[in-house]
Picture: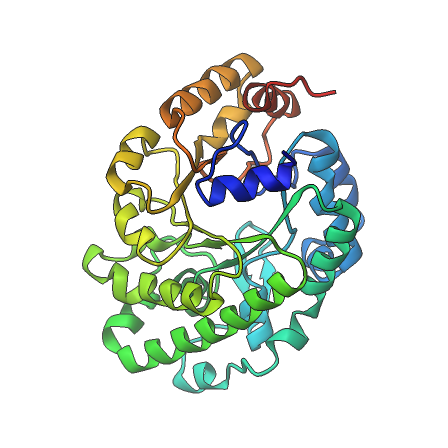
Length: 343
């Protein structure tokens, strides 16, 4: 069974020889080769340059026996393609190039050139697939409409995301307009990623947990459901909603093939809760990879024990890889999951 076959079989809850493994944000600052590249090019330049994006995507696969590569990009390429660019603040965090704070600015967002404006992502996927070969899975991704709207309305990273809730409550028609534009853009974007070679897609609803419980379906999940429905089962879709594992049955009803869980959830109990309506992905605490190889292996075995022998399990982190992760801990993790020592 090839890594690609293993990954896709698990996503469809079919028997596999071992759990497939890939890691959210698996490329990045914990790798010295990434830091060398980053010293020459800023992040946004690397995202927009297919050759650099492909190189960063492939770096972790040269070190570790991963079953899937996830394309190096950013969720904020969608707002940028609509006309609201992004950057990284000197003090840390994301900043949007302007604040989306009027009806006129929301109405001016242009989703008529998504494929044209994001061709560099398609080119990066095509190039990565060529270099990767056919035996390893290739993943694309996007942010959910709700999560993207949080950044767009607040003007970037924020502590409480007050303005997006004020918009959703106080100007529901304008909120709907924004969400519809984002949803339409994402549908086109994800179809483009599939056409360029993506075997599966992950939707990040990273800020789903700031939604009031009674509004989560209306403000976030119904838009995700619309996106997945429009993809017409072309590839499996993984849905990750940080802090929302207790809503797993609702997440499953979006049509996602795989529910990705953060580290606060027990995999065995979650499987009992949702049955076999979706595969499960998760959920090692990424901070584990900043400790020791011994601790990493103990915690990885615990995750595997929780997952048991259930069909449809993909090993992953419960959130993205942190820059302070240690290579020796990642190697120890791979040894536990794959049963092979890293060469």
